[in-house]
Image (tube, rainbow, N blue to C red; front, side, top):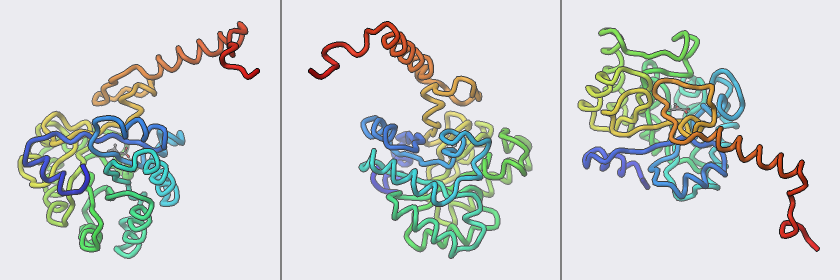
Amino acid sequence: MKTIRDFAAAKVEHRKIVMVTTYDTWSARLLAAAPVDCLLVGDSAMMVMHGERDTLGATIELMVMHTKAVVRGAPEKFIVTDMPFLAARKGPAHALDCAAQLLRAGAHAVKLEGIRGHADVVSHLVESGIPVMGHLGLLPQSVHTVGGYTVQGRDPAAAARVREEAAMLEAAGAFAVVLECIPQDLARQITATLKIPTIGIGAGVNCDGQVLVLHDMLGLNPEFNPRFARRFVEGAETIGKGLERYAAAVRSGKFPAAKESYS
Ligand code: KIV
């Protein structure tokens, strides 16, 4: 993917969009060489990289720093960066300033959670030339209102609300929308109704694309086992074995060998 037009084309041509989170240069380098369409510098960085319990502490400075690190590792990839907690709620001028910092750092688009009460901010960014990806369903930045990281849109009223929000986002000019933790049938209905692509996480197979947190799909955090996060490799186990081999080689005097030493 090079531009937001490629997202629209993918939907029309029924090509699934593959998105993965990344926060640093070394993982971005791996992703640069992988058949992944789009990178997300998610505010999940706060939890995954900094060990916090939620994403609320991700400031604009932190998101700029992670974005720059990712751009260095994957300069050819399409990069979306999360707007930090409350960035959209301080009005269009503040949101525009945050988004400008992220685009200057090298992001191609920003992602914003929710739409109710800040549809004007989405339109303002879009009309200012900043591509906006929406994010509906489970909104991690609203974890204290929702009361946890739970599935959203289960009852008819809640489902209708998410459907309405999806329509509002499209009308405001978003080029794509992440649907997080909603029933797969609701995600299917929204995907069939919207012209813009949906990218699911915990939203079933019928979305136009999927996103996963890199560390979850690589099995780097074995204690974290949500239903939707398939591990495509047992990373923690593989890395653990490597560390055991290193420690054993040091302790037995087998590392470094002569060829790994200077004469
Ligand atoms: O921050 C993040 O990682 C995200 C994904 C869960 C979509 O927003």
